[in-house]
Image (cartoon, rainbow, N blue to C red; front, side, top):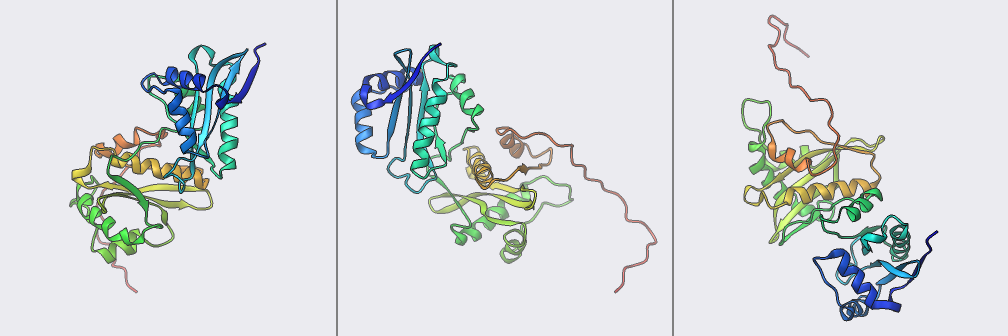
Length: 298
């Protein structure tokens, strides 16, 4: 039976650097760089996973400078390929998680490359999801944090709504600002904390909105996702949807539902990046109003 031991990474910085570099392959770390990280990030702790006396894994957790307001701890969880599936990664994960929680963080943010399916599989098994990041120069906020962005959301809707396929004879319209805000940004379905706004140079370039379908059942639906035409194709919509899903998980929702016209290829392509389960197709039925019916009065 193999023996697993976790030791303080500071006891063997050379092994920390070697294992990290070997697992990542495309990023290399020298021991003095690891020492510098530790000195500059006081919250950082790292551990070596030792299997039968040989250092084979690295785990860490920290809140880097500039991320103090975030809800995550940045983590490394790396095990040499030949030592995987022995329980080392699980022990490092538990130790890093405990340190993150001691820092007031409920989530870990870790990284890997897509040519390392073991690490991605380990992460998926433990509930991690790939988190798309906004393109350079784009930040994401919510209308709960910055309600003054509502007018910019309407401006994006004015551009995007007429381009969205639907069952009517004329392009869909957003209406005037007051009309739009009264319908989309108020009422029992409205969730300002889950109405995410993408900003570039201080201007709204996209938004994504969750709306309550059933508060009691913990179900919300993707009411809208829209991006200005000149910002499409850069990952803005995908990053907005990832922010919605992360909010739903953090809030404890049980389910999110999304629906798109089959002609809306861009929206369906965004959804394809996430593990949605297909529902039966939604049918739009169009037919004649019955002739000779008496007009409604009163």
